[in-house]
Length: 206
Image (cartoon, rainbow, N blue to C red; front, top):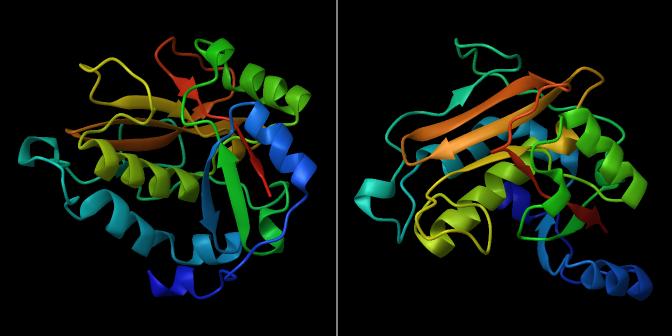
């Protein structure tokens, strides 16, 4: 996506202490993103490239077999929209940024409600994932591992994932994901919803 690549600087400057602390916390994977406004303007194209096109190095039986199910509410009927707040995004609104994250789920977030996870992240000074970040990273991991896990370490039999996208959250709802070779489901769940199988990823925005 040339529109995404063009705004990215050739070199980045950041506070070394912040980077050091992030790495100590396990946030040792990173990805550079263009300004958030551009991500949202090109979201349809992003979804086409990352959730509909066949992925190189992925076996035929692991390619998505159905189109993504998208809804900005908790529903059984897709409406083609996603829930994603546009402000209070830890500086993502200001320009290109680097997301440092842990490519494994937060251990004490399993089974918690979205509200509880948000409170945990705020207490730690962490960020979660936004919807555009999720689409990019799931495609990266899909091509890296050849299946639909999201985490660096996981059971070899685990071929899908379920996630809270904590930095999509509005006061009452949060985007959640369920993905496997059968397809991708991204819709909005109430913040008091919980599922013991649904994980959360944490990171910091630089």
